[in-house]
Each structure stands twice: as structure tokens, then as C-alpha cells.
Image (cartoon, rainbow, N blue to C red):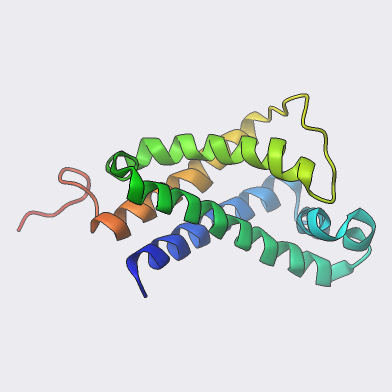
Length: 158
């Protein structure tokens, strides 16, 4: 597997898993948590009436979206190496970009038709996007695309 593909897959799987754990613990262990994700594609009525099948669709879509966000960061990191050199800070900031991008661009354009405004500010969700979504994407991109952590951050002496 090529390094860029490996970085995207690792970043997307780590971010998607962190966000999945957050969503189920924050919003509750209910089918509706990921049926809401499916509703962005197939509409509310079909998603919330679909039982476990639309929950599964929501989980698949959730990971697909995480892979897309990871791909955006990894491609940007190849073009702007400072993102990879400063992966922790860049990843945290990227989590904020993802939060606002999802809530104020993707969801309003989805079948849910949520309004663009007012800005939705949810401190716990923002923190989760920064720490559990953007941060792992940044670190995975750095590790795979730059060959590991820089000296002083877990590097072992020769």
C-alpha cells in the first residue's frame, strides 16, 4: 500500500473510531445515533424507520466521511509539509475545521437540510473533534508520510 493511502486509511480509521466512541457515549447507546448519519443520505423517515440496517449504513457512512476528511488532511500535508512537521497542533486545529465543516456545510447540504446559521457551538463535540478526530489524523499522517515522530517525541536513540 502506498504511503499516502496508508496514512489516509490509518487516519480515517483512528478518527472514525474515536468519534464513534464519543458519539455513542455522549448521545447514548442508541440506534438513532448513527441512523442520524444515514438520514443525511436517505432522509429522516427512511433512516429512522430502517432499524439496525440503517444504523449499519450510518456507521459505514461515518467511516467513509472520516476517510474523506483524512484524505483532505493528508493531501494538504503533502503540499504543505509544515502541517506534518507540526502534526499535533495542525491536527487539533483541523478537528475544529471538521466540526464547523460538518455542521455548517455538509449537514445543511445533506438530506437533513439543517440551517447554515446560527452557528452551532457544542463545547464537548468541538473538543472531541479536536482531540479524537483531527489529532489522530495529524499524527497518523506525520508517522506514515514523514516516517515517524521527530526527535524528542518518542524517538529512540540509535
